[in-house]
Image (cartoon, rainbow over all chains, first blue to last red; front, top):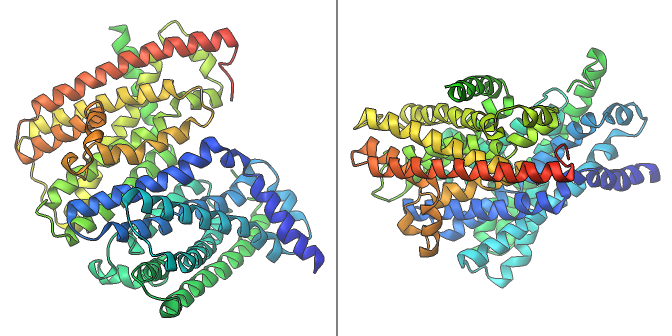
Length: 262
Length: 256
C-alpha cells in the first residue's frame, strides 16, 4: 500500500517535473496563460460580430475548454516524452503496479489543467469586464476541477494512443478541435446539428460548461449537481477506458516490439 | 537568374518536405479547420447581417495564416536541430535566400488550407462558392502567400535567439486572427488596435481576397499587402545579417 502510494505521489510528481522543457516560463506563460485569453477574446468578438451570445458565454466556454491543452498534451507527453528520452521501457519493465503508476502521473496534470482554466476564467473576466458573482467563485472552482478531471480521463486515452501513434501532437490538436466544436463552448448545443449535441453528452466539458454558465447566472451548487455528476461519470469512463487501453497497448508493444518506435 | 533558380528549387524541396510532415502537412491544415467550423456555426446561429460568405473567406485566410505562424517561427531552429544550419550559413549565397523558400513553402500550404476551408464551407454549410473577380482573387491569394512568406521569414530569423521559438510562432496565431479582421470587422475592435492591424500584411491580404471575391476594389489592398511583404523581407535580411554576425562572434550558431 505504501509502495503504491509512493509510486502514485512521488512517481507522478517526478514525471510531471520531467516536463521541465514545457514548464519553463518561456513556454508555459505564452502557451498556458496568454493563449487562452486570446482564444476567449477571439470568440467573444466573433460572438459580438455574429450577434449570437454574451461575452460571459464565450468566457466560460473557452476558459474551461482550454484546459484541454494541458490535459491532453501533458498526458500524451507522459508516453511520448518517456519514449523520446528512452525511459519508457525502463518504466514498463518495472514491476510497479500500473494503477498508481499511470494515475499518479495524471494527478499533477489534472491540477495544472484546473489552474489554467481558473486563471483564464478570472483574467478573461477582468479583460472583458464580465462580472462573476462572488458567491459563484467557489462553486466555479469546483466545476473547473471536475472539468479538468474529466479531460484528464480523455488524456489517458490520448496517452494510450501515443503508444501506437507517433504524432501525438497532431492527435492532441485534433481532439482539442473536436472539443472546441462539440462541447458547446462557443455554440449553444441547440444550434448545433442534433448528432453533434447528442455526441457532446459523452464528451468532457459539455456538462461542466453548462454547469458553470448556470452558476454564473446565479444557480446554486445543488442546482447543478446532476450536471457535475454527469461530468464526473464521463471523466471516470474515459479514465477507465484510457487505463485499459494503456494496459492493452503495453501488451501489444511487447508482443510486436514496438515500444521504442518513434 | 541564379537567385530565382535558388528560390524556386529551394521552395520545391521545402514544399515537398512540408507535405510529408504530419504536423505541417496534416496538422496545420486540420487544426484551423476546426476553428473555421466553429466560427461558421457561430455565424450561422447568429443574428448578424454579415453573411456566411464573409465568414467563410475569413476562416479560409485563418488557415493560411496558421500554416505560416506555427511553423515559420521555428524554421531556422529546425535546421539547427537537424544539424544543417552551419552548412547553410557557410554556403556562398545569402542565408535569407535559403530561409525564404522554407517560409514560402509553409505559406503555399496555406493555399491548400484556403481551398479546403472554402470547399468545407460549401459542402457542409452550403455556402456559395461565387468569386466575382476570379483573376484578381487568384492574384490576391498569391500576393497574400508571398506576404505571409515574408512575414514568416521575419519570424524565423527574429526568434532564432529563443530556444522555444516554436512557441512564439504559435503565440501569434490567435492575435493575428483577431486583429487582422479575418472574422471580426476592425471597426468592432478598440481604436488602439487599428494601427497594429495596418502594419500587418494579413490585414490587407484578407481585405484584397474579400474585395475580389465579393466584388470591390482589391488592388489597393493587394499593393499594400505586397509592399508590406517586401518590407518584411528587407527587414528579415537585415535581422539575418545581425543574428549571424552575433552568432559567429559568440560561437552560438549551434546553440540548442
